[in-house]
Length: 390
Ligand code: MLT
Image (cartoon, rainbow, N blue to C red; front, side, top):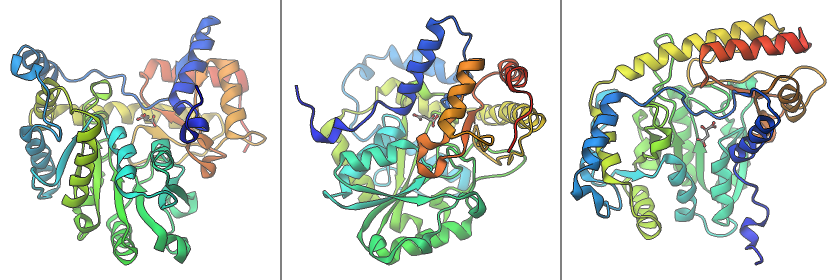
């Protein structure tokens, strides 16, 4: 049963590996506190669940769904963008449903990369960008995100021959894992770069609604010319606490959306319609959840930043996302620090290097754990290590 070369070097997904470590620790009786995966612990709003229950009872929804998503779902996505950012989208041509944005992020590479083609990815970055590219036979080219540049890639440092060969560029702001944000002047440079080198921009924006203190992240699609060069991936997961429901979308350039829909219609058969109906309710119904989530995550961010500061850290306070991205203390690598913390305290952190080489020297804390457990995690660090040196 020899595996194909394309998966021989493919490890299980990052968080599948972390789940294994958590299971091992739990089996030894450790009271694990996971600050690992960014998986909201808060429930999906009741009105969305009620809609699912009702829609699940309708036999019309028990048959094959539409491949590219119900028109009503795509209309709701278009309406959501119009309401949020005054972005106009044609729901028939410029929106496609996804079984969670992860699926679309992996499949887009299959639409545009021939073996050996280059695709630009942020480093550190969501692991699926690089994995999708490699599975499609492409070659990921890392754009380092450095703290001194606000964790934005330096487009003018991408070698000319690489830019000419690149077919895709992945970007993600508000950023996972760094919590960084991007402004219009950055995105305008991206659009100009993409036009110059004929590159399709794939902007991944799942954290756009989790922003603090009045900050409103831009959608890539708001930027003049964005729709000429790319698409935005988005999802119900983080905004509406629906990671388990697996529903997202891509929106933007009609040719790219059509290509993604075409590959998907040959591989999957769409999303259970009752889930699409519930998502429509989420997108168009009561939006209180957005403000509630922001308040909860901000309180958690305060606890983490204050706790880390007491332990000796100087940490940047992200304006958005559910993450904090501190440096590892002196004498550690990302992996050695996270391993030691897990062994000594039962607290799970994500090592920065698992998001790419440039993530080395950092670790990520996810704010998807309640305040009591977050305080407990920080207390365990304090009890076991006291102050850290940097
Ligand atoms: C993360 O924690 O980086 C993401 O939530 C993981 C994922 O979406 O698979």
